[in-house]
Length: 214
Image (tube, rainbow, N blue to C red):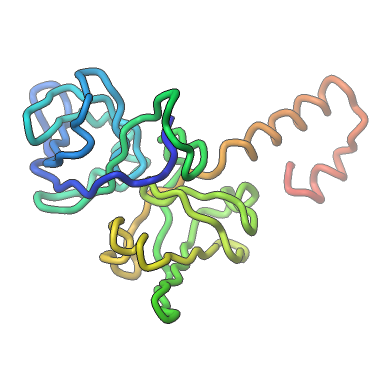
């Protein structure tokens, strides 16, 4: 579990096949503090398990599912990445509950400057939009952000100056992929409603269809 507050920008040392699968090695410093083999670190919002440690880097394996569902497979040597260690019982909850389980990749539609702030519009698969609500939480490349507006297959967020300086988003270009994790609470609500209709048929099929649960 994570909070979506990026602790450090690391840099890719290598992202390539290995004798055991596919390895991603990251040069960093802050997130190595108190980290041990087997611990979890979020890389661009993807929960990965540390398999190797040095004084200045860590390595994690990328499973086929991870490579197909996220943007990590496209990383190359020198690329910056957002890093965050998993939470502890004493962690301050500056963002929201982030699982590190990416739902899909979105595409950056546009950037728009607004004085020292930056608006970013993201296009996502249609099926994700029912979980994305105005003023709700969204995680983009591991960064906890607030949704401002929504459309049929897009939403936007705004980045204050401090955030722009501490995450990778502003250095990306329009059309670039971003890892998207929706707020898991919406999924639980949907599941509970589905279960209620099968055990207590008090909600009609027409109601569910009208509200996007068909």
